[in-house]
Length: 260
Image (cartoon, rainbow, N blue to C red; front, side, top):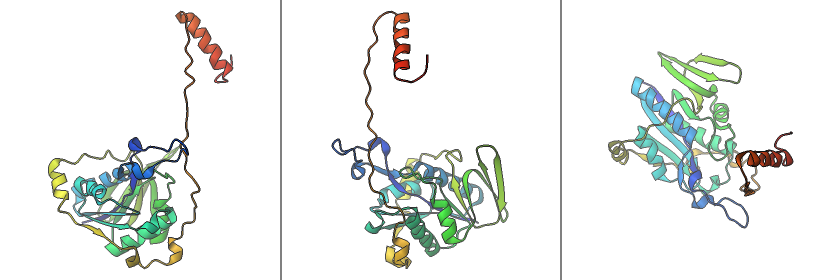
């Protein structure tokens, strides 16, 4: 029976995100944490494979200030175990550092037949984690996956590109990054939520992974993040329908939206 590792990231819920009016800097610390949208899609795909083939789904996560209640959501959806690293040193981690930590955590947890993650995180969205995990673990990776099928000893994945559809067939292990079209995440029932409270969530200290200092130094430095603030012009057009239509066209031409 297959063992599946699913990598998830705790991200701020955009609907609860506020910003400082004086600096336009987002107040990430005040936002409600949640699992990334694409990560939930990857997780749903893993659960469906488990329902069809049996096996075990293990959730892996890393970051600073990881909230166990957020990880419980994955357990409520059907995961069996969860391992995570939470360390202040990961506050400024880029995809390079995150992949180094998660790849070492995956090795510590044990061998997996299929490793899944979202194609991009909700906050940074740089599409790098899957390929970097592939490099760190020396495992093949297929990105932007919209379909996964298992057969005896083989994994078949499908992805859609701009001008064609590609299908790959390979042995395990394999890393796949989930596109949003892959699956629709389920909502856990009350019984599943109660059952999740009894499933193990294990915190692993960063020092236990034995990473060299260089593997924990980000290659990308984030200088600042600012909200792009917009304001409506609040132009009111008065008159009959035809008159307002003419004024609207004149205004749009004047603003350069289109040419007359």
